[in-house]
Image (spheres, rainbow, N blue to C red):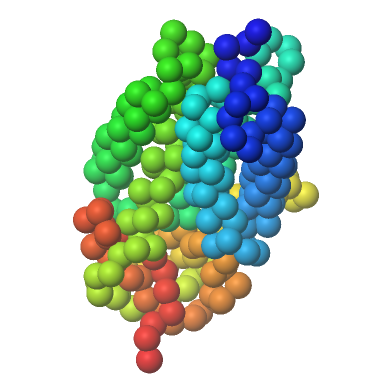
Length: 244
């Protein structure tokens, strides 16, 4: 018997029920991942929320079932009780969106913070999930998850939960563009607007814009580049509409 096959004495979690729950989680993870890559300008905040919450739900389920689930693909067949897709895919999508939608003056403290956070999460999982010990494949999966998840969560938390007033620099939109992967019929990956270079803390005139805000900006609009201190004191900046 597989050491991770759930015992029937776990209250409310028969093997059949766990398989259904994980199958539903896999569908949700794939759906959210495809949605936020193909249609990032629609339901952006909701999709990001699912990317944050789905891995947490999977980890909570793993701890609730006392580590009898898995985080890997076994051989040529997918282990039916593997949580790999549910934790890794949303985390990767979250990290990718943070990398192409947000702007930071200095990425070094963000990367350092992500590494520290990833190490702490890995240590907790190692402590409470004995199945990870001695299983290199699962450790690799968890390492991929914690690194991507930590970076994505910290980046968005630093920007979205920043309560500082910051300051604005007024400028004008000269051009706007969207990068399309795979040619004209591909999927949109990132959005940018061109402003005066002196308005950007990084001195670059092309600034990334969140896809859900893309349609609200037009060429020759007078806008502001907002610079925030950051929840984690990691300075960030973004193009915004100037307050009247």
